[in-house]
Length: 259
Image (cartoon, rainbow, N blue to C red; front, side, top):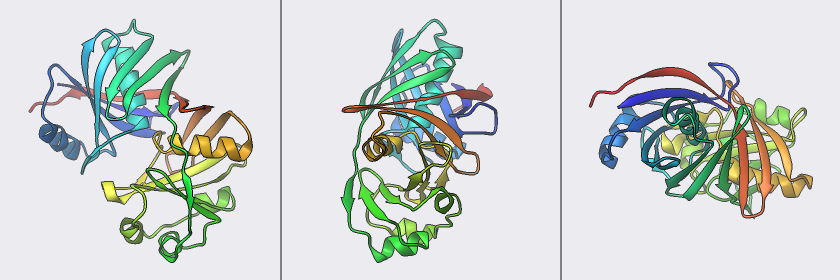
């Protein structure tokens, strides 16, 4: 099968979040997809199968498990289709575990239409404080556990205890966030439960961060930055029951997988 590695939410190679994209000629088993994802050893590998022009099946696997939503691997997949598979397509529809996801080309950006997942406030626990080494201002829960910190510096300088993050009962991942200095908001995301200590840029986490910050900042359109070592910029729009997440991507690798 054809295999690509794309740096998503990046303007240059070695930025953003690298995603593996496998273009399938025919459907394959979940077991084989999981083995390939483990072999690739990226935070996510996407598997895309073309049903007809503009319509595709899409699945995402971490090195350890299949997941229900992944932003950067969706962006990477859309980039591969737009540039290497169906170059004439302007709008792509992906059938996924999170329903139909649409990606539209808008100039140099790819705009993803994702479900909105407004987090609910929960109590801050001692376990949360020990996991991040400080007391958060507040805690929220959707798919992921989201901890609000006092400022951008607190987010960038955070050194979590990954074993304690792994032991947290709440959330698939841990997200820390704060109001940004040069961006509307910043974040970092940690997924040791999925075999990924820190994910460089996490589109799916913004399904919760966008409605959260839209309400807090009273803004519908925002620009966010995930301040990991690689970092990445996300153009965000709150759209009721949906969120729109736009970003650019860069091709790093093109090859073939033999299985």
